[in-house]
Length: 109
Length: 117
Image 1 (cartoon, rainbow over the protein chains, first blue to last red):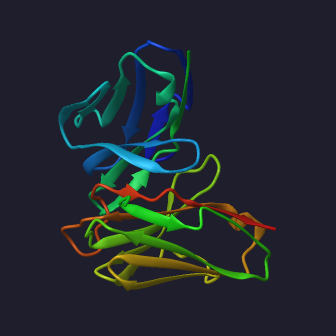
Image 2: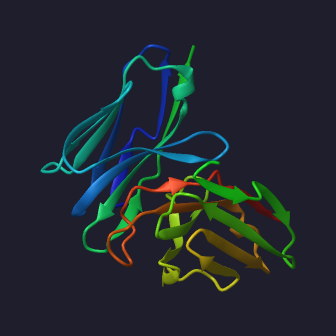
């Protein structure tokens, strides 16, 4: 079992829908990262959080440290949100990032 | 200028070729990384340089050879690669507070897509 698990692996949505992507982890962490990767390869850091909730535009990230779980929400989804969303955790024991396999999101007009 | 720039974006090479990937960061960060991304697998850390010293190797085959001449530049030298080395190679940088740590916010380049024939 991977130390960082994301669900779902693939997600399709209609424009305007509310989207949730989940991330569960099994190690002690210093912080959790959400990353976005568009077709073509480049990866952008969306959030880095260690507690509570962060919001940036239509994106919201939450983390529950006790349950070792984080969610990424997208409100009023748009086709330009189509990308792979990657969860990564900074492992306390190794001081290294552990990555999930990503969630591929497609938003149709 | 973008924060982290990688060249070339695409590279096709034979198994006997020698080529290099280049990465440059303009963010003043103290750590740089090479990651490998293969289809349906998580990002794999290959090399970490912190303050221009290599602190992580992760048992990468010797056909991959990194070089970090200064804090802004990072190279990945490639020689006698195998077809299974075909992947997207991503460079990243971060500002770390502890030598050898790599848990800070990462800034990635656009990646170099490598195909080995």
